[in-house]
Structure formats: structure tokens, C-alpha cells
Image (cartoon, rainbow, N blue to C red):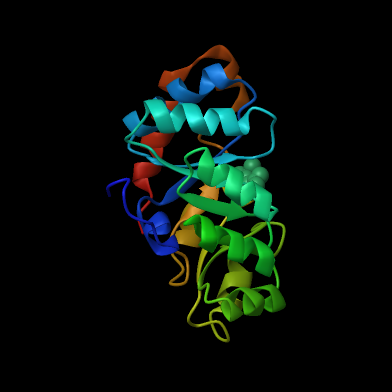
Length: 213
Ligand code: 3PG
């Protein structure tokens, strides 16, 4: 997957069974953290825009870790989408969906995985041609049973459940035909970042290889 062409949301979802959801408070953590995940076989990385350092972290990873495929999470406004693209993100993940965010991602060349938790939100995303969606917050909003219920009316939609997903319950989601991958923060624990325990992050990434889609 070269860095020169635009990604599709399906490509983002199909790269690995898990997309790590990453929160970074220190730019110095960004590059070793990204290298640790790549060393563990996970290269599709979602760095959330929920800290003041997030954009600088995206820039650093994009500059120094070319093997990573970078995404921005917590994209809530058109401005977030633009800033993420400028910082080197190639895909965006949002906690909800608005037409404005959908348009901004399209204009910025970002693949978008928009968050949905209701049928109306799915229909709104579908109106804009989006059929690969994030189910958020997955466990709190109904878990695998919700996705089973949606597979009837929304037979043409594929999901990345995120929120409350762990190595222990990921397989329950991945077994569903309408789930392509899951997202979760467990691969990059806060204490591992603070301790600079990159080997632990590599191991957590490797552990996801037991998951199959
Ligand atoms: C988030 O946006 O915080 C993600 O959904 C991660 O959720 P998790 O921490 O429950 O994995």
C-alpha cells in the first residue's frame, strides 16, 4: 500500500483485525510507540485528536515511520479533518457523523470511518455513500447482538465496532459477517507509554494475530 494513493475505508478495515485507538500526551512517545506497533505487525494506526499534542504526534509519525498508515481519530469538525490531513493522516475516524464532516474528509482525500449507534445515523451516512462504518460505543450500545439485528435491514453495511472491545471479546465481534475489524485502546496502555515500555506494546500488537477475520 503506497503512500501516494487515496485509501478506501474498506482497505483501512481489512489491513488487520484490530485498529489501535491511540491517545498521546507527549510527542516524544509518538515515534517509538508507532515503531513498536509496526514491529508487532500492526501498521494501521488511529491517533485520536483529543490531546493538544495529537497533531504534532501525527506529523512526527508521518515523517519518521513510513511503514505506518496513519489515521486521525476523534474527528468531529471539518477543521479537524483538514488539520489531520495536513498532519499526514490518510484516514479519519469520527465518534459520530455529520454531512459536513463527511464532505470535509472527501475534500481532504481522507477515507472516513464514521461512528454510528442508531439506524438513523447509518441511513444518514449511507445517504452520503458511506457503507463502512464504526459502531460506537460498541459494548455500551448493544454489542454483538446489535450488529446481528442490523445485519437484516443494513445488509449492505460493514462495521468496525469500537468502545469496550478487548482481546477477550474481539472474537465475538469478528465472527459476525458484517464485522471486518474492531478498534480498541488496549494495544497502547497509558502506563506503557509513560514507562517507555515499547516491548509491551509490540507484544500486545503481536497478541492480536491470534484473532482471525
Ligand atoms: C474511543 O474512542 O475511546 C475508543 O472507542 C476506544 O474505546 P476503548 O478505550 O473502550 O477501547
